[in-house]
Amino acid sequence: MISFFRRKKLAKSDPEREKTLREFEKKIGYKFGNLNILNAALTHPSYLHENQINDENHYERMEFLGDSVLGLIVCRHLYNEFPNYAEGDLSDVKGHVVSEKHLANMAKRMELGNYIRFGAGEARTGGRKKHSILANAFESVLGAIFLDGGYEKSEKYLLKFSKDDIVMHPPDRESSNFKGILQKYCQTHLNSDPNYRVVGEHGPSHSRKFEMEVWSANTKLGSGLGKSKKEAEQNAAANSIKYFESQEFKSTHKDVPFLSKRKHSRRRWGFKKRQE
Image (cartoon, rainbow, N blue to C red; front, side, top):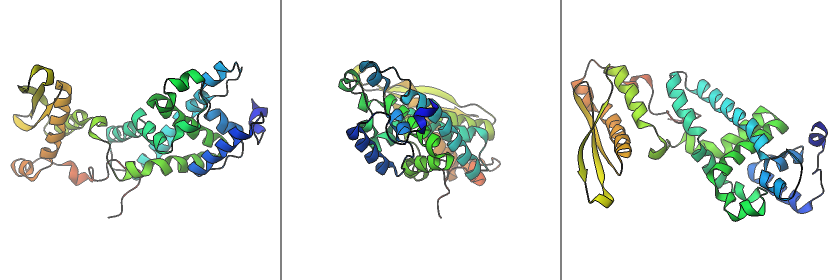
């Protein structure tokens, strides 16, 4: 294993593969001192199995390392950049950043699937577009950069492909746990849990929509529609959060402290503080 990673060029001469890897290096803005590490990070186990190659140096091992590196980088940034966030708030943001959906989206942005070596069977079944594979491969490359160049280089790689949608935009509605956020609001400021009530069902049976209301401390916070009760609850919670921070609610609950006073909401989702 050690001798394998000491070699600068590919262990087995393959000019076409080396050309592909060098192209990928340009795309990510990092040049490997040892190209074997990157080659392993971009090799799916199906390729080794199908070609009867007895080698454990494939992307699953690198992904194991990259997963921990990812968590460390994200936690360090959130801890340093958001000193006013409670542990639960930091966990919410981290959950989005390390989610399979977010990692897969970053992998798609760099066309990562085009650089992975697959067995013919996995390639035929759409392996290059599978979210799980793309997310794992993104972590694998992160682990490979950490192994080859250290923490700072791997940190630069992560921020290069994530800062725009993390710094500038919150996660989308589908990936956000509005119910969890609302529950924290209610417990902290109203000393009460939110209560969800189905108040209506609309549309034909094949296209049913549920209407849900949220109440807490004898106060209606909001309502929402959804194709399922779960979706309706999430939408109701999202609308309730807006009402919770509205002037209308504040004017009728003047004794309630609000999260906005704790600099909570504006910079909730980013690594870096935005310039005002």
